[in-house]
Image (tube, rainbow, N blue to C red):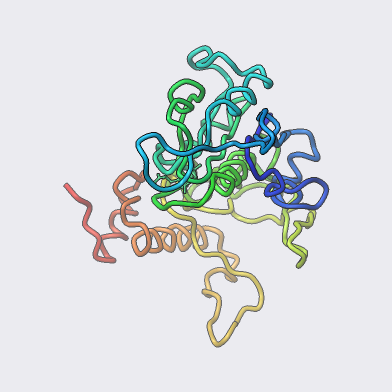
Length: 301
Ligand code: SAM
């Protein structure tokens, strides 16, 4: 998958091998292994005046400046992405990052991960001339209900969330299926066999912010029984006791069925505490509903 990022701050994204978002973690690994590529384009390279101006005053007056459409048009033209829209259901998307856009969610990331090419256009100042959204972009996406000072952070969020879903990028395909907002099958799957001893690697931070390969995974029950639209369950590692708080005993019991049940219930409890809205659309079993009811949750009619 190819990403093109259009920005007035190209340095924001860093450079391989070790800078910024492209030089770290999962994104860096995907780029090095050729599963994804990222090209950064400076919008000022598509200006023609002495000051390389990308912005101008707003029609109608008011505060701030607005990004002009012409440099964006020329940047997209140089990338052979015009005219737009391309074929409906095509395999590329030109996306404007915008607080006024549709909400970017995990399911948007899953959809984007099926495309071959994504262009991310980062706004600045008061935003981007509206004709860019109308004529040059396929969609307008917001990463949340708050206003950032520029689209670069939003583009980095979208890049990371999408790249980690590309087949082969994460060490284990289940990692992205069985996590918060994941699509993994739900609940009551206690009868599923435990995941086999995995040949796929697991990764951990090496203390410098980089991920190191820890080698084959140990034989464990399938890693999470959250997913199906709820939040992930709580994770613990050594030490077994930290500041007087012990790891739940069941996790050291070796009883995989009990661990799966505990994780499912802990995920439900956490979802109820932090994101009760998710329970309205989550795939819940009878057992889940009973457990939630024991915590005082009643589903809306
Ligand atoms: N005047 C705009 C408004 O009220 O909606 C805010 C413009 S903001 C200061 C500048 C740029 O930051 C936007 O053009 C957009 O690219 C980016 N941005 C701000 N908030 C965002 C969000 N929640 N999601 C995605 N991009 C955002």
